[in-house]
Amino acid sequence: MGVYELSGAGSVKTGRTLYTSMNANNQFGAMVPIQSFTLANSTTSDVTFSNIPQIYQDLMIVGFARRTDAAASGVIFITPYYSGIPASPQSTTVLDGNGSSVSSYRYTSQDGAFISSVPAASSTAGIFGSITWHCLNYANTSTFKTSIARTAADTNGSGTTRLAVNLTRGTGAITTVSCSTFSGSAFLTQGSTFTLYGIRAANS
Amino acid sequence: MTIAMQPIYTQTVGSGGASTLSFNNIPQTFTDLKVVVSARQANSGTALEVYVDYNLNSASIYGTTWLTGTGSGVASGRLASAGGVVQTFTTGSTATANTFGSFELYLPNYTSSNTKQSIIDAVTENNGTTVEMKLTATSFASSSPITVIRFSPAGGSFVQHSTFSLYGITKG
Amino acid sequence: MSMVWIATMSGGGGLKTFTNIPQTFTHLQIRMNNRDLYASTPSYTYMRFNGDTGDTANNHWLRGDGASATSEANQINLNYVITVPQPGNNALAGVRNATIIDILDYTNTTKNKVAKAISGYDLNGSGFVGLYSGQWRNTAAITSIGLGSAYQEDAATFRADLYGITSSQVTGA
Image (cartoon, rainbow over all chains, first blue to last red; front, side, top):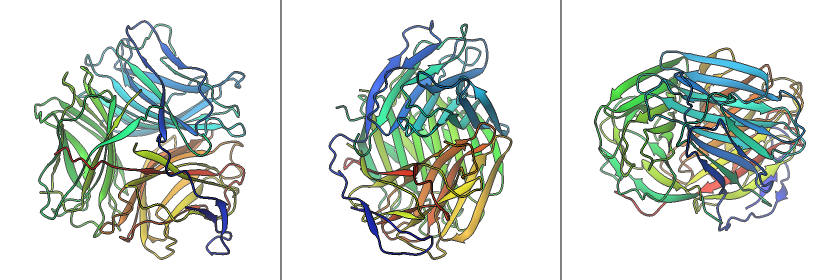
């Protein structure tokens, strides 16, 4: 198939091919697992995907997480960064439903990305939050990076459902993503898992 | 190179409609499950609920938290200790003709012995203001791995051409 | 395998189009990262199927702006299926939105075509995140998808990737 540009809003002019036929017969598929963590204990507050290959178009993380601190819920910061990133480069816009009301709020100029919230130790045992997170165009060296995440954290009588977007204000390619409680005293619960996938596109 | 996402099952509703639809004997070899649904129901309504249960288990061990947009307002609600997942929607017979609702259910760690927590995003569409747009979180407090997923329409039956596709995602 | 990259488009100008979309998949996904040269924020990216400029579409959204949440019917009887906000040229430099659009059963000739999207951008002080939907009231198979703004996407950074998703022949019933 071909990709054409139609120049002139609302009209069709002479088409000009931008790309020739694509590799629709790619045998490997677009979604490729890169790395996975499953916590064997509850003694770490952070898992980090490092040295992320720069050969994909987008990144995706699937998380299944719970925190150990004595609260009903807590944030899981899924934070993209690279060496030399500017200070406090993260900002997040959140859309939340908590079972009784809808809210939207924002964090600005943070070190971590406030993009997800999962159950913590005061909630019913054995309930973890589920997270799907996407960072598009992560290896681009001329743009800031936008990531978007869905989180489900129902605890059968409480909990939240969330959609959030995060901006990382740095033009460097993302080489590291941290999944963290951002706390020295709140850990990720044993059994928490995080898996990083690459999404392939042309020339990747 | 590991192929992360693979199709497992697909069902398309035939001319007689379907009062329920189940994926049975789900392989236990993947990490996560993903279901995408394009469906419409026979009963009257622009948007009708779809109930989801796992392992044919209708015990009161499901919780749902949702966030809704209706095209004119927003709301959040909850149902605890229910016999299935609620607040997933497809179109009904009084939605725009030939329009089917669309939803995706993502279920990480479906073989885990922990409570299963699914993410569901659903939209219905209609040539009018009123729709149901849902961001839903659901918990299923069972230690059993998921081997069956069943979808049941609130509106009588799923109509012909409704499709349900199940995928397995592996972490490698 | 089930998710396969089909094509990428980029570059500035008005509406850009994926054409001759293979009819061999079951569903489509578009992953988009873009910004407009129009000097107003938000600007909007529009999507159109098969070049249809008639009033054959409608769309809705549920979104938060960092202060409140709203849900609206954008308009009724439109000629674009989905519209998602994006940064304009007056927004914080370097910011692009992130959008993932799913279109199920795009070759099915008995169904109108419905698109579902999650989309958002943040400007460290403003922004949107939301769930978006739209339908094209036409049962024809989708063979082309047009994307762009009414003005002009940032030539240096507009990017949309099209993926095809297959389904199984096994029912599991």
